[in-house]
Amino acid sequence: MPHNISLITTIAAALGAGLLFGYIATRLKLPALVGYLAAGIIIGPATPGYVADAALAGQLAEIGVMLMMFGVGLHFSLEDLWDVRKVALPGAILQIAVATALGMALAHFWGWSIGGGLVFGLALSVASTVVLLRALEERGILDSFNGRIAVGWLVVEDLVTVLMLVLLPALASSLGGEALDGGHGGGDDNIWWTLALTLGQVGAFIVLMLVVGRKLFPWILWQVARTGSRELFTLCVIAAAVGIAYASTHYFGVSFALGSFFAGMVLRESALAHRAAEESLPLRDAFAVLFFVSVGMLFEPTVLTEQPLKLLAVVAIVVVGKSVAAFLLVLLLRYPAKTALMVSASLAQIGEFSFILAALGISLKLMPEEGQSLILAGAIISIALNPVVFLVTKPLERWLGKNLDLAAKFDRSPDPLAELPMTTPHEHLRGQVVLVGYGRVGRKIAAVLKEKGISYVVAEQNREVVDQLRKDGVPAVAGNAGEPAVLIQAHIAHAAILVIATPDTFHVRAMIETARALNPGIKTVVRTHNDAEADLLRSERAGEIFMGEQELAKGMTAYVLDSLEKHGKGHAH
Picture: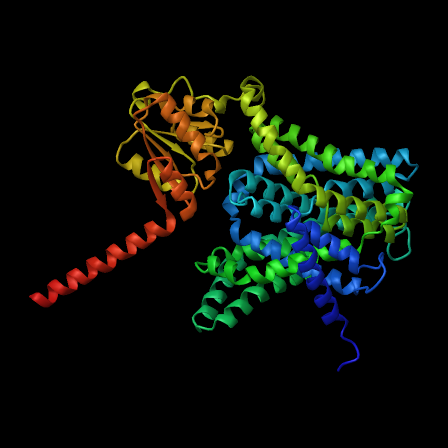
């Protein structure tokens, strides 16, 4: 036996304890990730008994972050990112500013330096992408419009954090700390040079990935797939995720998380992207467990007894302060209250980047050691509470649904896109098709309707898409079609057919109920994703139901039968 098997024992202990405590958590009706965090505490240095190698666990967790972000990239197109830019970009930047200010105010109250407060506030302002993705996937809303907003918001947060990680060493001396080289940092010229260099590196990486990577990596994936070797294909996918993430950090100063996210985005251009996602899923799940276990290992229980009020204040900023700020910002950007609730719940936690910022703040002598302990404890508590926060959004949504006047104040405050223009010709609002969702499927349906000269009105949550449709002369209304006001604006009472083409099928029944209440004779066409959902909709007589796999099978079968028939006729002659 080799003398040093710490890697094997760390993996075995982390996965074994994660399985045990994850099972206990699910039996207690708690999220599995709470069990993974508990497993980390048990095998960490703060509790008696076996202690796993925290340094190795941290590196394994980094691989987990890479693979998770790679998986997101595989499902998140450039088009998705561009579609949510007007809410994700200003929203994320303003939310970081608000949360950082709250953290700085708290640190000032404790007597910390401005530099310490800045690092502390920044660490409290950035949410964990891994936790967010797990929450969205468990609820089946990762591919929904609201899910894309949340992911885009986190991508912007990651970019801002990467920038701050590079700028902090240059600013350390002027903030009361020490430069990493032991000196006192540079002047303004050095700061501006560092900023220019950082932006240049990040920009160069993104351009390289979008220009070269979008062609090169899908081509490599296709060449490997042609060998017919499943293990080589899986190896190629994992090597791309980890290799690009490492290269992005080593050569461009971009974080592992952001590098692997863009790796997934460029591989998405390949026709084999769906297979790549499936092949990498088991590894992504296993390493995600290692991430949560490693977070638990960092927990210092003494902070609960020695500084309970400080910890309570930290948790309040993360869970309440950030959430309220995000909720108000999304509303100010004229998005629905349900979108604001989902985004605010997504951001009510902190994670991997917070730990990195805290470690950098300690090394630069900006933040006291207790700051790191408070951040770690706050992260564990906020991650454990995050599923509860998501649960709280449900009764809030129902309450808003019952208080329509209040919901209307949130959702329809002077927003011109929420109402159909008065200039819309009346003949286009009689016997028209109401098309809910203008994504990939909706666009194709709209193109055919336009070609055939059939009038239609689009109901879409993405305000930017609605704005562009109106510029193109297409009647469109912004909002969630699950809300009666949106379908009323689309003149559902006089429509011939309701076509629900959105991938977010959570509100389908509400849409159909509203449509039939206002127009009893209306026909409905629904897009769905799985047999269980299709059976439920059929039992409620939801009209014509189309499922992707079934329609694909029908099309392929029809082609095969047609080909065989033609082949048989050829022989007959």
